[in-house]
Image 1 (tube, rainbow, N blue to C red):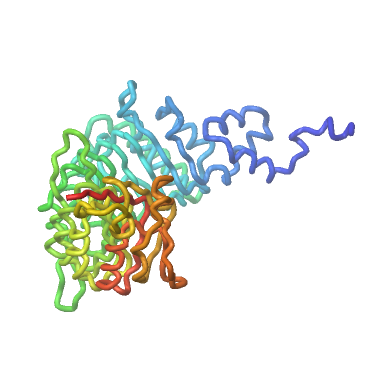
Image 2: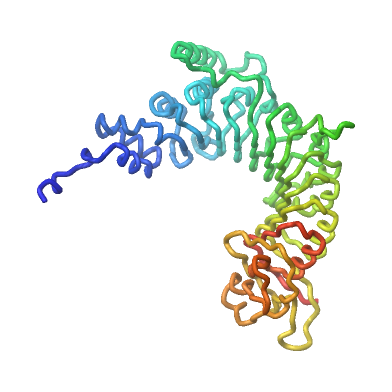
Length: 441
């Protein structure tokens, strides 16, 4: 018992201590490194610096970023999340070109970079970012006009003399140690670009993405200055050999969403898909871009995967848009409000597609994904007593005869499922967080 009472953390193996320290955030981790020399050595272990999230650290400055880069960040870094100062009372620049260059030299395995509310207008081009990046996320950031160009413009801008000098010092130090190869590369290697609420992103930025040779996934959310003409100009052209060329020819997945924030003008950029997009296999439409986008899906002959989210749809809209998509293999409805119109029932307890009830019924789908492949005909009879408890309980109605492996009871609108199963027999239907609104004429 005496030995147990005198036992301290010094008796724990280092692997266990590192696992304990992994539950701390970055600010707490830096504080723990000030306890003693042993803890400082453990805190610097690169296993603790694989996924670094600095968005919760209030008061972060460029000086602190330099301290973290020089003392803690290293070859173990895979994912980095930063928050700028656009929404802070201390408005200013958080990133510098010399810091980004040093980040590329010291962290050659960095794959994902996410920036929130950062002012990037002080950077000349995204070519200054680490060449090892595969995923770049920009949320609420401000961009300069030529940010997405392959080559950075000439020097001579204000405030660039000091960063250039420190950049040469960093490169010289790394060349002596045999490092510094992470920033050298022929072109930008980013495969996934996410733009969320970036008001300065325009058609010119979109056009400059055509020079990115590795870009296969593009997500545009609340990008209010992108127009249908800009999307149309970026669509690849098809040669005689059936290989798309020009524009975003390597793009395989495109996500577009406009969720109608106050003061935003609807550009209906998804109408640009009507020109056709060879090679585009996956499309995700959200908010106010769903309606215009559904009108253009017939021109996407390579489309295999479609997601509709955060919108209102009627049965006629879904059937008219999907009846010609014979090559569709997966159709997802995420947080969709299905508008079902019915005649006023003459008798109580009338059957209305299995969802009978009051004038308006909203039943949320299950929290996971509900996959449906077949179209059983025995879905008309529903237990009305389960509707009043919860939306999930109201949708979980078991038919009299359920084929095993082909039916999922979390189907919000059986009529749509049955119709789509006949039109697209090879397509998998997924309903996530959907609800139904029944309106009586």
